[in-house]
Length: 511
Image 1 (cartoon, rainbow, N blue to C red):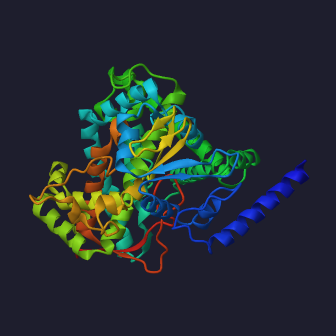
Image 2 (image 1 turned 45 degrees about the horizontal axis):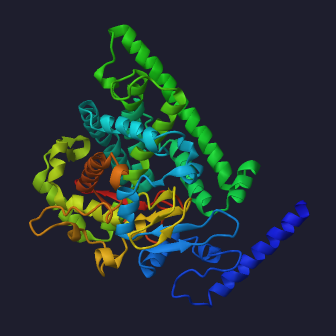
Image 3 (image 1 turned 60 degrees about the vertical axis):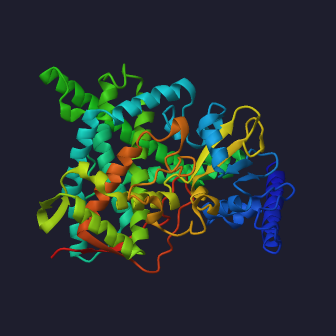
């Protein structure tokens, strides 16, 4: 039996390789050719090093809606869309028909029952908790305090250390460490101290990166292949299993430590101190935000979601932001002039200056425009996934059968000439500024970096605060020089992270 299976797989592999070779000599107007048995897999394999750009190209040439056919007898086919009307229909006006569903859970089972994975009443309940927490006055006060402290005591100190020794540093890694420290303090009340001159091992981010990479491959691979890898504990499934264990070990430690700390605080003073206000503590103390304390597994799931959202999303956007402005010195100079004009600065150690009043960050229109332009070109989540729960017809006229898997090409939407004009590939912050000097508010079904409809990101404003506070402290005090010869491009992952990071040299602006 095993011999027959290996012979079958051998013929399959040979056939796919032959079709990949043949594909190079057959023009199909730039669209994937649907071959017998193997579907459009040759196109996928030939572009596995650039799936985001290939999807964008295909969607441009197919007017924003394209059905990808996978291997026969496997559930690897999907409908890809970037047409704003179809996006609005799926994410907003008819969102009850297009759910995360079992296909999403298969990819992101590591999130368990959290907001990220849930539908229906469970989703509404989790969203109320997240929305209430992110908008609570104590959280806003705590976030500003923590962010200011981590920028002054960690971020600029590490940059000062690196610049003083003329070291090459991975800016993506540095920003991820900064984001994770801030997320842990506000999320679980614990500072892991990952951003320090020692650069300790970042187990959580490695686990996160491995999880997101495995999720990407689970979506495009036949179930039988990734399940076999999982059973044999090899390849990306082995990394994913190790990541799951790392998450569980870390979060079990967080929950145990915070529970002990919470009980100790109540025993000594009769109530929790204001300084103990964090996402985990709200769950453990039955705060009005979360209600009665749920089971530990649900707390764990929502903590994973919180740390994912507070770690990768804004740190990855800032990495692309610094890469883009390194190639556009006029943009960088305009941001510096705006900072100088609008922000009150606090003098800190080493002659450095950091923002002293985060309320003033709202005055930085050009910086906001530059961040929006970065998110348009490099959204932290390049694809959004849904499953159709019953037969339906899109505004474009396309029929969608029940259980059809859908990919919304957020990355592709930022590269559509029909949406952004012929200069859609250009980095141009000015496109976000109106004639009266204010920020243009684009429809979330055109600019979908934060999604749209009922599931629009509840942390959008918090993300902009984090990005602006971090970016201003860095830009005002340092110059960055991107090391030449790097192969800058995104990793094949559910998040849009740079494949090998961004290696830079840091130089202090003030003597």
